[in-house]
Image 1: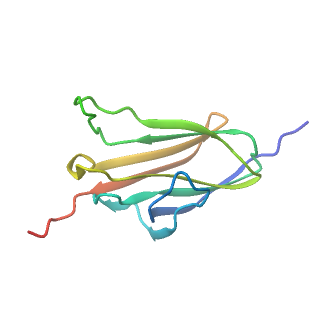
Image 2: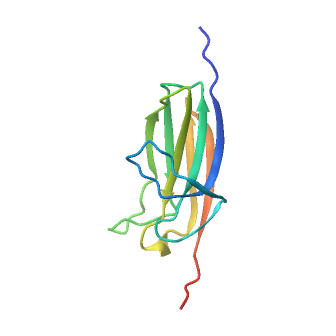
Length: 133
């Protein structure tokens, strides 16, 4: 029996409203950009629409720009897996800036894989914001 080929599209990419990980609702799309100001709680990422892949495993990864943990060691990329819930499914992959903002500046790469194949790859450039002093 032949398998249907999954149909994947990044439909929104940039800055979003604060995401509630406990909710089924996706964050609200605010601005299309890859340039993100390093401001606490700034939410950014992308929404992908995936069709014809129900019950398959979607792997995600967020590569941070060498952010140190409390002991000064560079944090590993944040990754995981989710099952695709529907035949026409929207998935948000994103992150937000937390204190201190000074070590969040740099390239943040976000990827999605399905069946061992890279299906989405976005890099966001987080930049310092001049202080008003």
